[in-house]
Image (cartoon, rainbow, N blue to C red; front, side, top):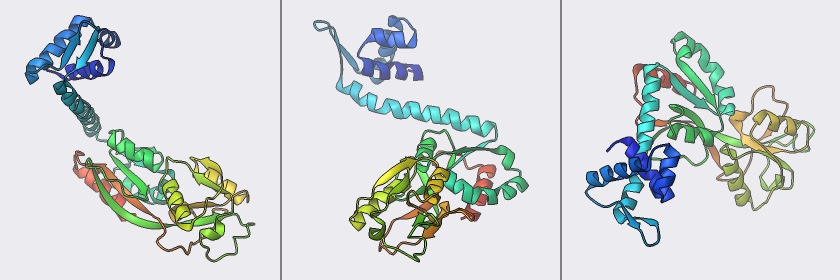
Length: 292
């Protein structure tokens, strides 16, 4: 049995047709048949039954059991390729959300340069949810993400670095600009612009809206924090964003919330348990930890 046999079998379960699998992989139909025979010899059982009367393929109980394991096995092989590729080229694939990058990365660059790590760094920016998937899929090695509900995945190691509150932000001309603090219920009738589902913010927004018993009107969703800030500064809407997204010089006013048990954003460093913690990787992680 080899990996290609697993790929053929996976497709056969999905297509229920030797012909379609052969066409998909641009091989002959006997190639798929011989592959299946090798698999059945390996596991000493029938994986597929042919119903010649109805011209159908039936996957046996053993076949269905094996199918549950095929994707994880192929995925582990793919991850091994990606990790070894990065290891041999001495690169660290590192992902951050744009808001976390703007707050943390400028301060790290000098230390990364001094340590000789900056030239070994491949950086990738995306929303926290997208970054989490990128770590799991092996597209990046380490992610610096924001999470309202910490991810629970047995493939990951998660390190909490910093906890930050969410705040209401409004334009300088907004009637809220003079408020020292507000409850979410008090701002529930204002139009909102919010970050889209690539980020952790919508989870917190839904949670606090329900907690306050309001259904705010969302006039726009965006994947760009700078776009959000421009809309807010123009007075068209207010927003609800994590405190670390608010930078010095932003033309907006931030207002703390008085609500009890309100959501918080946890900045986390996440990486796969299979990641080889070389001296270079450990040195990089130590630099990230210092900027918590």
